[in-house]
Length: 254
Length: 305
Image (cartoon, rainbow over all chains, first blue to last red; front, side, top):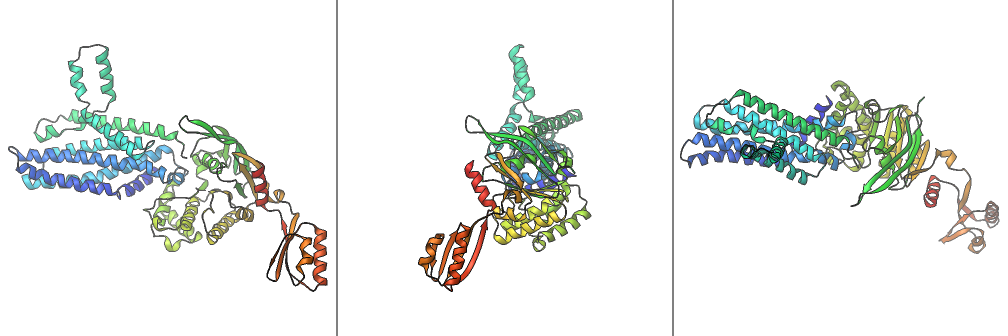
């Protein structure tokens, strides 16, 4: 009940953030623009709309998680609202989890409305809905959850600007770290290969949540791979949240 | 009956500057607050009052020291459930209305919806904010914020209420309102621990005080023990006699129109003045004996330190 109360209050606060609406309109513009882009393209126009649309959901959603998520914990400390909150009979982990779930709720609502626009644009073009698109959106949601957890981790000990930079770096590294996979395959075995393997394991691989190619181009979508991606997302998010709780538990609020 | 609050040998330092040099803020603070009393924690700015309170409330971690609240470990959820706290210059979620805000905090005490409604209505009445209950907190004045802060600290019917500078930044009416509420809390059997540097207010309501200077408690006890009843000097206002005859009988002699002001330290001189007034058919307009105030003691101790 306590975590829930904090989560709902966080949701109330986050949903009032103007950045969120700015990004939302930007997403809507991108989705509508994808239709215009499709008109200029030779080839399968539906694929362009779906591809650009899903990419917009993922990128704008991540920006929402970064820009709003990094301020949430910091604001409570900066404005000193945390002084009256943490002295109530709650544990510090409940505070962090409350903030996280509040942010997840906010992202869920935003993603829901962005998806509605996306599907509407697509439906106007094809007059049918591909159920596999929901799988892509679900995985984008899991990715956003992870990004929100990272934003909260950084904001529990750093300022919003630094936290935003760190979280954006996490997002970018996460989307390019799959390059290591190719590198490892090509490398001769030895200490260096082992080291690169360790680095790759520690770094997030956000491409695990990217099923755009499979879905847009109607390639097979093995349920085991999707399931593995979901488990990976949940495990990584839990790890990041645990880290945030450990850091936050020892913190002095001056 | 166990103490409402017990602090033993509390130490805390902060690391400051580029080289993270340690600066001792609390140097072995010890005191205890009995149940049912109003305890004043006095000290100049930067003495360590807020740091002590933040340690007690689990917002910062002390290096060493033992703290117990109502005979429970200070950081246990059971202790927190029985304490109310109002920080210095409180700031709350300004996008919430007063009622929404109290509902949110009520949920953190696991109060049911029905219980919350009743409690919140009575608290809003207590702090006289019934008319502003549905106003967003961003529209609240300083005094109103202090009062809603007091209301949130009383949501759980606490046995111990800790108030950090509750009278700071308030106008005389605001200060009186808070003082009245604090006195009422004592009448209800609650223990109140309040820090302040506004001495007159403390003097009016506190049973016992502790004075902290530079991270050390330099004095503590009952107000009646700290302040002696002895008359330090007498202030007089006289008119209708020759100023030249009065001039040498007291200190700080001043003439303002008809009236003459003077301070008398010696009781025998006071007798002489009164005889003079009678003989010359003058008029004694005011005679005020000044006893020692908390402020005198406080200023004396802080200077000595």
